[in-house]
Every structure is written in structure tokens, then in C-alpha cells.
Image (cartoon, rainbow, N blue to C red):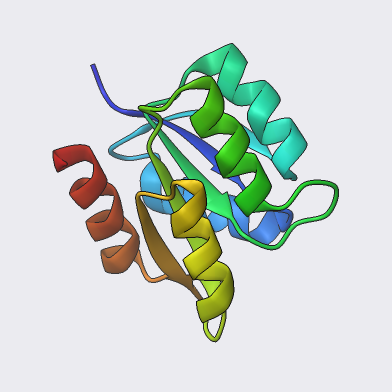
Length: 120
């Protein structure tokens, strides 16, 4: 059985890019455009990994990660961050992020972040 992934980003373009990078080796269980949707979809699909954008409307990735970790302390969340968001990244780690990947996405770095978290 392949690893199930939930993709969360407010940018349709970024969600599509992640889907293209991941769909060969992972099952894409769903996509969300904000943190509130992410928490709802996490409860519905129980993914193995969540690819979570930090900056989103309604509920950002840091709050969504904290909420998901409260539901499931074993949840594995990889934050997707833009260059220069070091302070937000520190908050994300505090909220329970298991790894991160920097935008713009490059396929090798996305794959490495996922394999590191799957292996952990």
C-alpha cells in the first residue's frame, strides 16, 4: 500500500505542482486551500503525510498543524515555506511540523523531505 498524502496550499498552481511531483509514488488523498479545510480533510482521510503551506487565508498552516497534532499526535506534517520565512518556520516546528520544503518547489527536495519523514 502506498503512502497517502494530503496537499494543502491556497495556490491552485502550487497544489497542482505538488500533485505532479508526488502522484507517481504517493496516493493523493485530497487537496485543501486553507487550514480549516485541511483539518476537516485530515479527519476524513487520515493521511500518512500532510504537505502544508504556512501562509493561507482563514486558518494558516501553523494553526492547522497544531490542530491536526492535537487530533493525532502521530500525524506527520511537512511545511511548505517561501524563502525568508525563518520566524514562521520556527513557529511551525513548535506547532509540530516534522519537516519542511522551500518554495519554489524542486522535485528532488520535495521527494527528500517526504522520504525523510516516511523513514523517521
